[in-house]
Length: 155
Image (tube, one colour):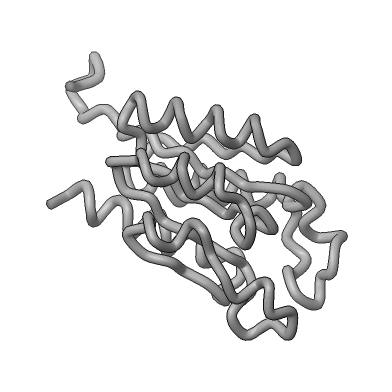
């Protein structure tokens, strides 16, 4: 499909962020850095545009809302970059929602959960369904995730 100008239409990609990520820049900056969620969202849109992707960034503290977004992504075959935050480590509903995604799913974490002292963070219910997981790269992990999706869609 092309736009009226004859350039290819950008592929839609969802960047979905879970609980407490709206507090980026304020919550534990020694772990998550000083970039705010608004700054992260703007960077994701910019990085996506550079890759030919139409990125929409969403954040929620409500698990059911995230599940609805994942269900819609599954229905529409939309690629997803997902930082499910704490839900990563215990949500079987999240596991089931991710299982139905057929377009690329990339799991992202700003910190490296498997290196954190809390052992509950060492389990991911997203990872079994993700094409790849990018952890411990700070907010740059989102850029890497979008690059992975762009490369996956090019093949």
